[in-house]
Length: 573
Image (cartoon, rainbow, N blue to C red):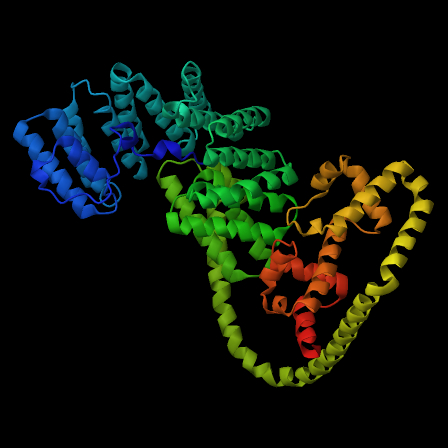
């Protein structure tokens, strides 16, 4: 999982940026170094102003022949080209290094070496990047011990996230951790660096499959984030622990954590960890046997990758899943699509020194993928030929349509009967139906308390709490689970599950879904505005996570689809 704080520009360690409101128009040449610096960083969205500031800064530095000011001017130019021309950015950083060498400055040239290393990493030149980080740490060790440990953190991230050297990265993170423990880590200056190191340790332990140590450091990081009021980091630790639980096949606990953290990653536009969230949701639903939902989340991972063009070996397992998923569905086009995507990623990562072999060979090897890809292309070509033959049997199909029409007529009649039954049952419940149900439940309670081996008093307490749960319509919470309900009832999951099975005559999931569907039926009859909602919107309204799960539960309960029910309601009201 990606750590994001180390990628912040080194400018955070330089002079504080004074945000200027409406800066008066002055002659740039008349401004001081500090004024030019502040004006440059106050206009990050106006590249023309930044260009003019950098030019004025460099002209002033050249005129006064001050090496460190020449270095700072070149650094400003480097930032201008950072995201659009890597070669030019590196050229300016080399000038920063040249002018600031042996000046004893607190950040230069160490920071320039770090920026250069970051740009080399983007080009997958990891050996050269590490060489620049090593030069940075040697200088920082003499000039700025705090920044020295920041550089050590950069090196740890490169080794863990780019090179897969988790043990070596862990040693470096722990070295940084020991340093920060001797400092005031709740000071804003060091607080984020300390949290980043804790996250790095937790993430390395996760990659090394040390579940208990991962949990320990995730909890430590969560506590520190809470104390220092760093919400983004707090939920980053929640997400990482969710991933840790998924790796340990504790899917329901993992799902709970990821579901809480993912919206926060989206809120903070933390793209790399949004990708991580969707990937581990895919793993959760794969583990729970919910194949379609797993595929949906792995597809979201692919969508993010297509935009960012960045993915690590940690998150590529979704592609073999998608290939198998569409193969089993007989969907050749999507199977071919994800084989092609998977092979492209493999080619990129192999070429750029990332160790993908062990992951690829777990389910597919490249020669097999090539063979499958060629076979699919050939098969799709044959399918097109078969399309022309299809016209030859069109006459037979036309005849068959007559029989199909009869079948549809009978089906509509059956659906209409089911619709009328729902309406009648709903109307009946407004009278004596509720009391009859209560009497029935009491009779069941008398006869079955001894059968299930739970004390009568406890059974009655839980049944009362279930009544309260139903009356307050708490089943409309989308993330309700038997674990959550048991915690609310101050009892254990086995008791709640068993009582629902026996006294409600259904599984816990079916019980929740039936309550939601019954509520949906009532609301759709009473509120005409709801009928204008999309099925997806209705699903969320009634506590379901998506349209598919709502439609399936509605059909299972009533024998008709919600779209048909709404259509018929509109016809009769």
